[in-house]
View 1 (cartoon, rainbow, N blue to C red):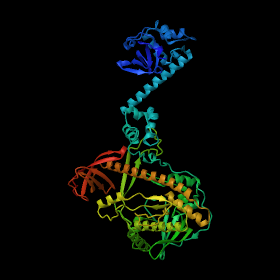
View 2 (tube, rainbow, N blue to C red):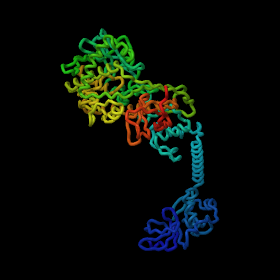
View 3 (cartoon, rainbow, N blue to C red):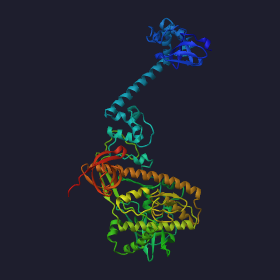
View 4 (spheres, one colour):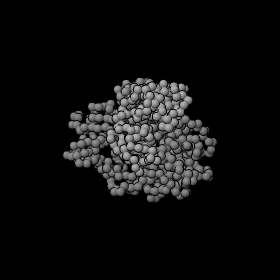
Length: 630
């Protein structure tokens, strides 16, 4: 095959011109810039016999008329050399090279070096129209990019910017706008761009959508409560004790002599396994609590039917909890019931803690708390706050379908409330934990497959006392997990534990209720294999919910700080690494990194003031300042 090539031939190599220098087993060619390479015969294609002395001979296009040649060659087939003769009146190496380029444009001609045909007038017209559209689209794109660069976008840019939004919401993995601007293709980078352009304002919270959480309320038909026998427990004084703004009360407590009753919304009475309501709750995993709103795991209609204290009497699954001689809580009785529940806030109950039955309930639960502490439970009393946010104006759509040009919120407010340690909150917590431990033992003893919550102990257990010690010890705790094997929950100091008291808010609790209800009725239980699958799905949804809540809380905390740029915060130095330190701001339950801390001591008061916020990556920085005098 190499016999067809000679020195000084013009050849095509990788769609570029080259000159044959020497022919052997391999062919030595010279490319643009004088670069010499050896190639196989099949790697090159002969364009012109030559001789050609240098590629500079191809720099200038000969005089010719492509359209005239196209008209003349209608219906004919010619070689590339012949095409050069028709266009340029000769077949010099330069003429053949430019004829090759005309062939590659695929406008007037198509084919190969050996066989070139003239395209029809209709084909040429269609190609020209496509090229014109392509050029116009390129011009529109360039104009759009220029508007983005100058931050002067308008409604005509919505289609492109909506794709940027999709990336910011975590609903896309690539984006041409960011690529064209040389910006790293990441959700936080898209967020930053949308803020700079004014397409989003600072109140837009992308984290629920970014984590894959459902961002609209569930809308499903709610079946009526089944007509079944229930034990009448309305004579018991029952109390649902929650935060002031609780919208889905699903647990209540009663004192009954030496026992307590824990009444829980009877969710499994309405929500059968694999029903539409069950599948929706399984996908969500849990309620999503955001400072600006709450997105529920179940439709509002479920709470209207089952919420404790929302009607004169409420349906419940009630557990009567007693204690063994060693203090182990036992479920003495479990019944579907009717209860009459009074709703109270933690603050109201705390003011009545010396009254009956609250003082007696506290005595009952405090002995249980002492038992948990003796079993290794750790109470890490770090600051906690509750955030609430409101926006004046037209709120963005949480589903991520923000429409460009709509009036965006211009005013917002964020309220931060300290969550003090209240005896009433401890009372309720321990009553619910007692129910969780008692039901876990019941599940184990009756071999009922269900999700158990466990947590391994820290590698080096201790009893932290100072703020810095608590901050460090919290990091040593391993994550809790759900499994079908009952095991120690080290953080709670409980050997066997199942979450059972929040079936309207958390899917794993609903799973336990579905199994208990099936056991009570003598129906078939969800088997271990299927239960594992459901637990895994719920764990996935619950994890997304938890991450979305953490990021959302940080987002609104930063906006609170932005609303108070001159505020001086009291902090506590809780960690040190050389001259770098971590300062916890109790008022906000947030920590910040500072430099030049070499001379400061752990647990020392440090006063800080905001210097920078970047909402797109949830970062901020502060500087150390002198304390503000009272």
